[in-house]
Image (cartoon, rainbow, N blue to C red):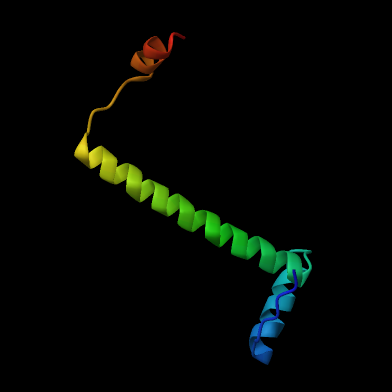
Length: 72
């Protein structure tokens, strides 16, 4: 899939120079950056859900209790 992006000359220069610094093509730099951003947002959403669940039921277990329950 091809995607076009409108940038100012300053933005374009900054991105090209940063890609060169990291020894990446501009395409690879942008692909990695977008995917990392998506993954970070998913991680934050999962954390917030887990925190909400913990606040509803703040029961915790030791490693030994979990191992015993799982039969390790």
